[in-house]
Length: 524
Ligand SMILES: [Zn+2]
Image (tube, protein in one colour):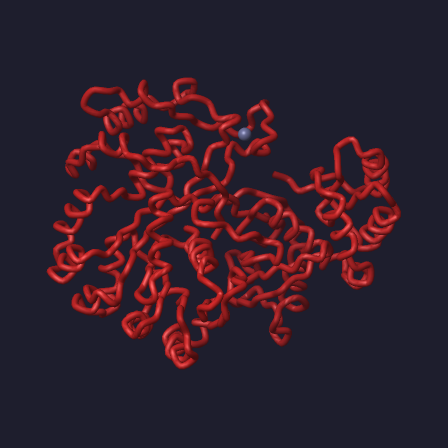
């Protein structure tokens, strides 16, 4: 994916802004990445705008339809003095970030090597090439990002040592975006990588739980848990699995009369009803624990601790929950059951974990790509590897039906197809959604935890119709919402051998009543 060469100088940007503002009665705006905003595609001045941009050597990126009031508001926000104050390199940095935001990118990787630089976007969890820059330009952009735009202006960029910083970047469209920068030296000298993580923008909208992809039953459980006056809700998942989005969705449902503290490293999403406390665990490794201790003195109702990754924080979380506060946090583990194992590793005792005033709900989630229904094709029409087909047939084969005939599986178009899909911009995907599993801690579960009997607990959960995140993925595959290869990419191969030794009857899963209607974009 190559970026269009857009404004090469702030002066051009300024000229376009002046022209857009002169278009009374027919609102039109051009932003720094070459996107044009109009009220309708047949707007009479759109053609003039295209000609003007062409004459100035600005490539048109995408045309967006927006309301007149939105365009007017955007034009009013664009400050000509601010644009004029920017250097060419500062504008190029903003152009790249604006483009990343418009494509729902989580991280921008700037890989500076001896002769050239590749700029990659992490989009829907995967890296895609966005552009190639000259080494000279890339170095200038990294220097400007670190030396001129970051919050800590005393720091000077040095590609030979690992560095990190954060910045609050104002884009020319008026949007402010928070970004964390990190760099590392690379071979051969003097190569380096700079990665920009986009934390939030002030224009971001808050997703609710079902928009994240939680089933209606799971949403109900989470909503019941968040209404409890005390106890702990723990969410697990790998890095970049949308845990922060889920936490923000949960916290936004807390009533206004509750005092909420959110302790984060760093602050990612803005939560309007919370006091958000940044901690820097690079500098203070006990940051989460000491800040939790501090918030307990500040009359809290609910405390959200960014992550539990040491004994002190685990202990503070249990203490806060057991003294009548609602606690939300995350841990790294590979299933909901394993959250218990993780907390044991952090030296909480089985009796602490089984205490009914501590854990309320355990959740585990991952993000999976959702196929675009407009351009996905039935699996029978796809050229597939014979070995994969045999493996899946054995895996999905139930007692009396052939899964491949029974279900309506789809696979997206391979990239590079000549077919054009306007619904997904030819990506084949609508976004990502959560696949999750939730355990509500009942008395029987607590007994199993106390006895260290995890196999017994698992069997108990299965009898109680527990559905794992893998079950949810299988159901989405069955409904043609998720591609088999994409599912295997994050879950590992669907191995018939593994299933046979587990001895689980998958008929029940296929007949289960999961709500698979929800599809949405979730970002971490
Ligand atoms: Zn499509």
